[in-house]
Length: 249
Image 1 (tube, one colour):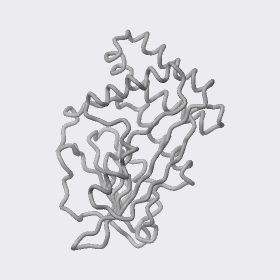
Image 2 (image 1 turned 60 degrees about the horizontal axis):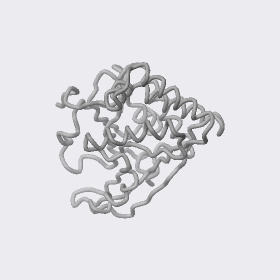
Image 3 (image 1 turned 180 degrees about the vertical axis):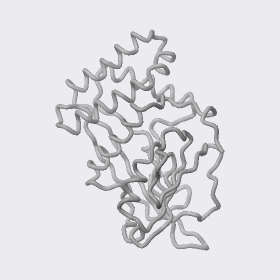
């Protein structure tokens, strides 16, 4: 099993961040026409299939899906066991594991694989640009590509998935664009606040300076119509031993 100490989380995991992640799930869902997925698998889920969520966090997506599709079985992989509730729905389970060590299942164990990833920010003010330029450098220093969503289609094709489709949604970060923008902007603010120690170290700022910078981001959400691009890409891979396996990212 993976050791959470082997991965350097950018965001400090605490109750505030768990609450933030849960709220972000519902913001994203509402902006994707109140859906949790884009792949054409509704009938499969209703019939009952095996579903894997990689990097499941506090399990919000899994719990939402397991409530809608009680005949399907949902497995989450998460490195941080403390953020998953102790009491789980009957058709769910969680494996505490570092996926950088590989996925601990035999090939073709799942019919549908789901994971979430980073997003891209647009129309930022000067303070926000400064913060996210630093975040981009931090991610690249950790061998993470902050612009990965622009290459998801390419990666699925490289791994021989077929019938690849992509859906992009722009979600506002500003109260100038209504309630969703206000909630999303606050969500991004709390995310940055959870990264303040990492940001302070990288930017060589004091704790006070970093907090002021993050407050500046929140101020800019009220004056700039900033937004994020969320991308869903899905495809299908055929197995010799099973029905087609669908993957959504």
